[in-house]
Length: 116
Image 1 (cartoon, rainbow, N blue to C red):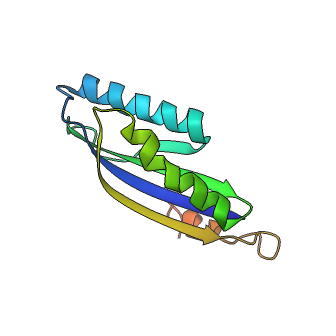
Image 2: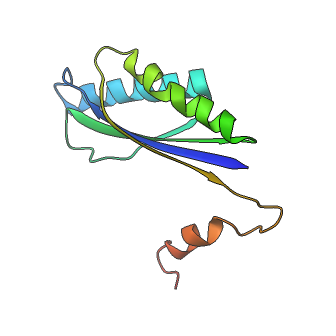
Image 3: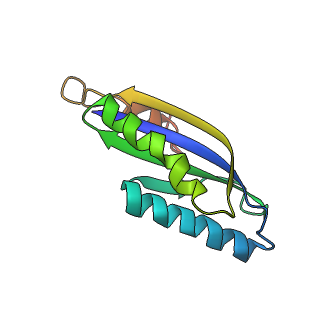
């Protein structure tokens, strides 16, 4: 199983309020979900009107499938003329859960509050 994750930093020059910012980001999230069938979350400081960051995750059987989807993310976001992409960070990893069912899960568990 191949997993890809991407953070896209955005400038929203036309957002004049938090409500305007939320509308623009919601439109971008909906477009990514609809067009690419990816998971999307807002991962930024929610008090800055004209800045935003989205995290995108995708899972595929082959690394080429992950790359194909991640390569289209920026294009889908930039279809909205109110959005300027200012930065992109991405990573692709391979998880063999058949060989090691805990692969990739221990790191997450160790970061949960109250866990040693």
